Length: 105
Image (cartoon, rainbow, N blue to C red; front, side, top):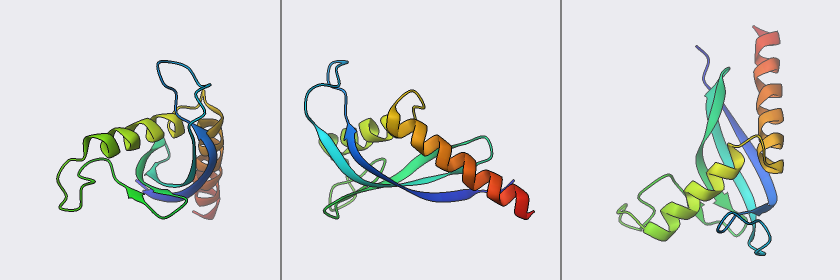
């Protein structure tokens, strides 16, 4: 099984709050996607100004940081959902990567 990795750049990613996308919270940055031919998950997120987010343990000492951990989960949920615009773009880029590696094999 091939494991792939891809940097996915995003801009104006909207985080829904209470099920609504019109709250004005827009995020910019990139996500490190990792997975195989069946799909991907978000492994890390780097916001535009350099802040790095991981799935858990975002405090300086590696302890949980509830707000930042939740922010990671919410951004990852948008990118991993192919019903969102960023999610569709991530899925397309992922499919292209898998296809390129399939052709090279």
